[in-house]
Image 1 (cartoon, rainbow, N blue to C red):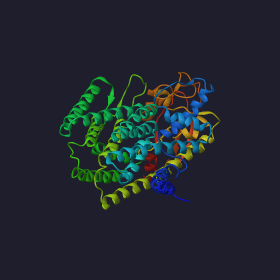
Image 2: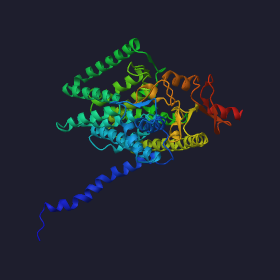
Image 3: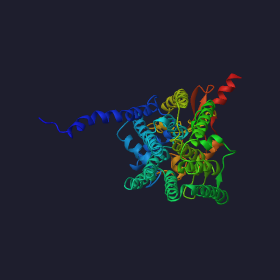
Image 4: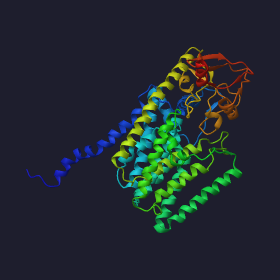
Length: 492
């Protein structure tokens, strides 16, 4: 039998393919580990998303009078996934499948963008991308926004590669991203527009486009300040400019990680200036500067007329986008062994601290679950639990997940904001309908005036070591109880 030359590569193709794909499979497995190393994933709004997906399933079946599910084209993709999964799997399996999917979408979307700008696989910056993957946006539980950012990064990467056919695939990606959240889509369209405009210009003239973009951001900030109800973050935070605030999650000890990350980013950025292309010609560097300027110039929250609740944590979201673009602009910077080692150390310290803190938060949630199990079935509860030591208020929706199948979280914030597909009508017996009442409960005090609804308050007791319950009476003033303050009072 004569073997032709064309058959030899076919025989060797599978082993080569496996060898080339092995790093990607390994990275996908490693990036999923923080999603399975605890009993539950602690990511603030995740508990609320799970609870509201369960609630939406029941409301869609007509089982909850006063609650309804409305058609919505954005800020719903993650919730659709949760609702479908809850119909087929347990709560634990649902959250793991959904969050691992979100993590993979974001990590590989940002990896594709950094790889495209660096013209090679972005393994050198993968530890930094892992930090962003499990940073503040993840811990806040903004999963619709998070997924949308990952998809939009993939769309930008397609445009950056500048293949005449492949770049049109960015359009369907942006449509899917819009279903997740509209804000990253607007960001992606602006980035793509800037890339196309900058490539059309001579490299020596691109600084003019950068200046025009900075003037546009300043004008937008002035317009919002004068025309839109908004709240602005105090002071200038250099860690926000570089995106280093993304590691500020569960307490003051993360400031050391943020300081180390900030120093590392500045050092690598200096190395980037020593290499080609020139900073004045570098499109991605310009995009990072524009995004960084936006993160420190635009308001932290605004009130839009289409929502009853304001759009909050804008600074954190913009800082997240700024950090991604900074990674993309550093893709061509040479990283020597000390820089790589420092990056790995930062990632290891951050994830180790996250593991310890996530375990502590799970213990609090377990106490809430034990207290809820003692209440009558279908009880209405309001959790007044907080920990002022946390930068990310991970206990704000601590009753959501334990209430699935057991009780109703009367302080559930989603229906009142009108930003989600689940809506509640005035007078319903399942949830507060006024977003101002939710805001008062979370930041000031809330006066409970419903005599027709029996509600139980969950609060820290015994120096914060336990979670107790009490029946709320009409006229009672409710405010969050700080576990940290109780612990400090016992020590004194």
